[in-house]
Amino acid sequence: MIVSLVLSAGCAGEAVRSTHPEKPDESVIEPEQPEEKAAEENVTVDYQGIELKLFDFMQVEQIPGLYNSYNPQFSTNEKYLAFEVDQGTIKKIRIYTIGINKPTYALEFEKVKEVSLTDTSADQLTDDLFESFTEESFNYEFTWFPFSSSFIFTSNAGRGEYNLYAGSVQENDRVLRQIQESLHPKQYNGYFMVTEEFRKDGQARVSPDGKKIVFSSGRTGNGDLYLFDITNGTLDQLTTGMATDLFPQWSPDGKDIVFTTGGKTAHDIHIIRDVGSPGQHEDVLVSWFFDDELPSFSPDGKFVSFYTTYNRERDPFNTKRWGIMIVPSDGSGPNAGKELIDYFHIPNVIKDNTQGTAWFPDSRHIIFAKNIDSDYNPIYIYDIQKRTEEYVDTGTRINHDITVSRHGLVSFRAQQLGWDRIFTASSTYFQEYLNEKFAK
Image (cartoon, rainbow, N blue to C red):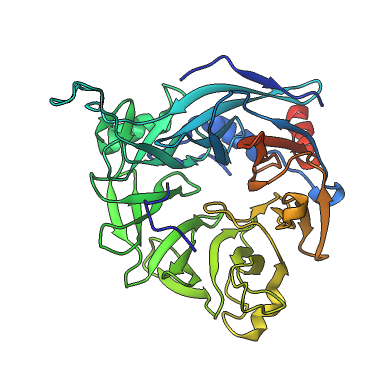
């Protein structure tokens, strides 16, 4: 069951080293380095001729302590890896740079920033006890702006209410500077409040062109989706009604938004077509007896995958045994009934609380953790065309939160000495991308 909205919740020097080897948009909000984006788009990789393999599994963070790390997120340009850290009353975000040694393609990670907003008045002495008083500080639901070191995250800023905040790794980041010039947002501890105060906002996702943000908000009493134009501050409500709308995701072309909608016991998958245009409308992608959550577009935009409680055995006593279903994003497939069974692909997977399906850039392979307690939730790669899965020997256990970068880097969380830590792996896809990139 999905947790209720907003109730879930720069230092340098540490380095980790591996042992193995569209045209810029003339918009108000521009990428930090538009020339870099143009260069990236000139790099093409024919994945059909490459056997997909993973290698160089490594633990990113070496910081000791009693904490759990989760929800890794690669930046679009694959220069940064961010993830969230839970230390009880403090939830913060750590950001690492990703360095690549050209002769060997070895990966290097160095921590460059920690994101943690707290109330500036929290350190004042109380009148009665003359002791410092610190509110809980929750900072999470991190997402990057495309081709930029700027990012959006959800935070209560140590004050209890949740809003969206923007920040950046680089001080001169063009995206963050233009957000300041366009919106004149309030500043808190070096970060900027993008949405208004005390609105219960979260789960933001930035459009592929970097101009708009879709997010879920409890400001009307329900969880509804809103569209915020960060070039001019225009805010539009996308969904209404009694259902709670969560976990929006943009299509790769920026035209559609897919999301989870429902109540406490079951959820469906809806999609908003032609977002922001006169022809904008909402379609039902999947609505049946089973619970369906966390939809994701394939990189080519042709498919939507999501977690579902459907299981072939139709076990009525295990309705939360999750699997993965894949349907056409254009709505050409069935949206209800037994015909949907043909679109069920992977049984017994680990469903995460915030991560959707992790697609590789070929839009053919999916990586997931299998729900096998006796094997400590091993990782597999699934071929959607052959409908076959292949075991990946990661050397880790209790695997969750798997994500893949736009060219095939993999990151996930796994348990290490009783605590969750972030791991990465390279792939033959990413290695071929580097071959093409450095050859140009």
